[in-house]
Amino acid sequence: MELCIDFGGSEIKLGAFEQAAPVRTAAVPVGDGDLEAAAAAAAGLTAGRTPDAVGIAVPGVLDRAGKRMVRAHDKHPRLDGLDLGAWVRDALGLPAGATVAVENDARAALVGETTAGSAAGARNAVLMTLGTGIGTAALIDGALLRGAHDHAGILGGHLTVDLDAPRCNCGNVGCAESIAGAWAIRRDLAARGDAVADVREMFAAAAAGDAAAAAVRDRAIRAWGATAVSLCHAYDPEVVVLSGGIMRAGGAVSAPVEAYVRDHLWTSSHRPAFIVPDRPDLSVLRGLAVLAADTHS
Picture (tube, rainbow, N blue to C red):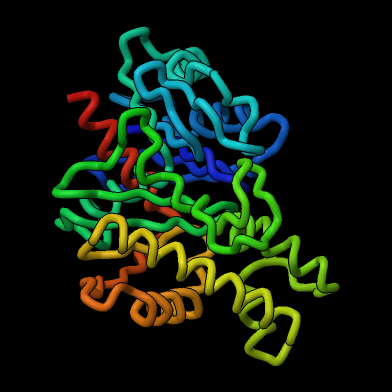
């Protein structure tokens, strides 16, 4: 059994997997006691069994050898520098030799979808996970892109898409995440005096004629589309996977993003297939199960 823990921006998702298939899943909201809540939920999922391996995903840059998150601006500050392998062993009473895989959440999601998910078998793919933030990852010739310092491929949400936009909390200007992450969308809706509470409601309100919601929606679509164009220009994928909580809105997001990409790509660029997972909420956990099993073997 693989125990998988995904420290997302708004909730922590957990799953117990057997042979890459979810047996039990749970979710707890992010809060001051998120580590304790995650440990309690994990103990409940394992139901007295000792996992063969554990996979943990975080929304930031990693020191994978040290199993630590190096930096994720304004997300899970208690995880900064924490030895996640030691934490999960202590929290669940695992033996010292229990194997633990730690990975960036977008990379884990891409592994999940290209091995056991909607893009299974793809060897050249990029992923955008749209949620509280915007995570990205790239697979080239079957290998995850990591770079010299493990930053490569995962900072697509911090590509500049608007030079006149406010400074992002990462230090850059006009990042896609600062425009079209769920936190930014909620901020912009509130600034316009709109009572809409989340992204799905925003799409419904915009379709019903809410001009404020439509303006925020259209700007978000352009930001998502511009990010996807940049990923395609950089990595030349066969497949673009769109995952994350925002993709619960389905075609209302994927269709205009795909149309934007096809309209803005370099003229000779390959027009990739766009795929939305059947269960975008499981993308990261699926990938962690694969990574944890590989680590154990």
